[in-house]
Length: 214
Ligand code: ADP
Ligand code: ADP
Image 1: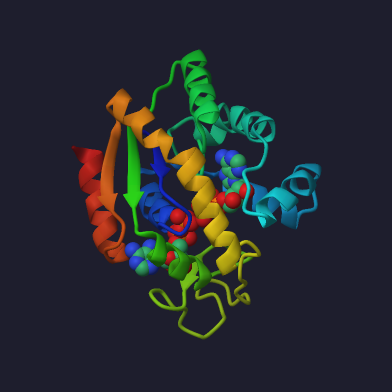
Image 2 (image 1 turned 60 degrees about the vertical axis):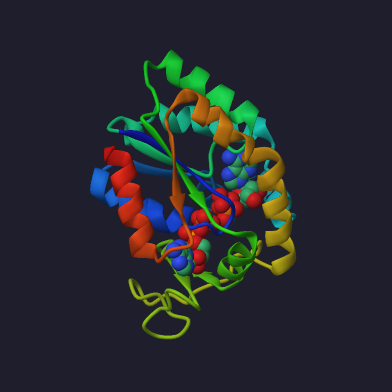
């Protein structure tokens, strides 16, 4: 199974991805997670990406495409994958199709999560993440058992540096201008289905599982 999850910042892509990869046993390939890991480890890639991310802009395509070419042909991806945060513009989508063609692969389904902009800002600004295991929490909808502490490993939760109200608004604009056109791109390929992301986390998961099966 090869899947893509699309949706604006804060829609719940990461949250739903965890459920999907558990059920379908595929690799979760999140460009945002890979970039943040590189920043945390102080790599050259991380140094190049950080300023773009902090400004809510897309990281240049050549950086992302080089990274994805390696990922898609890696051992990790051989039994299927879920792409989260990629592709993010038309050039990335066309390049992905070329990479898939070259390797005799195709995308089975594209999950498109819809959520209103006001809800997105509230979700992203109340998001907290574990720097150790990557688990995502939310002060309003998915609080940890102990305030500020990860349920899984006891690490202190952090706020992503791009989760300020101002940067989230910018990221939503970037989404509307550059990523939203991909909905029509994948509709034309006949692989996309829509999900109402304003429901509870579990209800959204159920809708996604139904969509993947159909
Ligand atoms: P994305 O990866 O699309 O940016 P996340 O999965 O990180 O989004 O979710 C953004 C925030 O909203 C997180 O704090 C998450 O816990 C919370 N969240 C995700 N899905 C829902 C939902 N259906 N209802 C309420 N809160 C949610
Ligand atoms: P969200 O979906 O909540 O906006 P992500 O973790 O997917 O968050 O992305 C965070 C940031 O990482 C983006 O604002 C962007 O700067 C960068 N990024 C992630 N994926 C890509 C991509 N495919 N192309 C360009 N930049 C990306």
